[in-house]
Image (cartoon, rainbow, N blue to C red):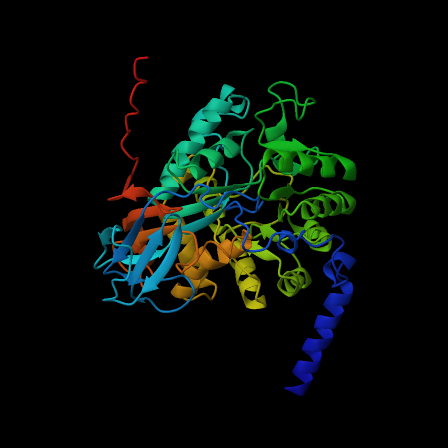
Length: 478
């Protein structure tokens, strides 16, 4: 046994020594994320997004109050489900009461949820709300250029997510200004759907992952000329910094980068984003993950190859993983493999993605739920979300832990853990009501009956809910 332990230690030391410098713990090259709390006391109301802009106290808050009575509460903290009454005033959960306690506002609207589970809304950390449908045939279709069509695709997919119990999405690249428009209208309660935290455009190099989506139809040399593009091409550290600033100016909640890149390029981009208060996630693989870790990114998407040393550093530095296992299953099962991509030059199949996820789980990497449902794949909801949760149990999570990953942990990865992800007093009222016990059987998530986002009823009896129009009287005669 002693010999085996010594041999194991020697091999680990040898592996760590052989790793590229970026995969050894030499520290991050970027500054930490700018902490606005230093300048904004908690008494100052701010916007309910990563930007934390000062706003009036009642900003985007609906009028009135409601209570959910008679249900079992799975609060997302990891505690067992229990009978409880949830009280919401405006957009905020103000109390979680024991059964029989009726100390809520006298004018509150009462919902009887007996026999149902009340829980925090699910989160999808990897969406592309406006990604082209298969019916668009190629990225060179008119749909590639139309901001109006992009917004309509996004609105339709928001409805699918909401009906599946998802109350927050992190959009990690969509077309033009569509994600920002959808985010603003949803936040104001003008359209139903989940909250949107958007990266704006994905940033990559010429020929990098998804770079094809930046090209003008018929003019590949005119990258970035299409204002409706979902990707921005950048070359050199200065252009990567400028690309970050452009997304920040549009109102981005995070920055999304993709390989390939140089160390200097990704370090500059991460440093710029952090200086502006924005977290960074990256779509990368192999040695590009080493570069991303060295640059100090906040999370890494997908279950793509990386060294054991890189995984250890992710765990040590708190770099989260959004493994997105579902899309690789869809690709493998529909086309036999991931073919034709210069950014996927390695073995990639159902076995490799599961093994990578298992390695990250064993290492203690923080993991959240993201689905990456592009083209017509949202049609697989809510089954796709349930499949991702089930896979988390295959790699070592309990059912409760998987649901916590889908709510509390995913909110933390979005840098919104202080406001979202659990049903607790002081949190925003993003709540779903499920006909069944999803903490015991994920399939109950096929029966999401009611959803509130920011205290607004947006799903009723499993259908998208829109309040009836209220007539405004005509001006009186003078």
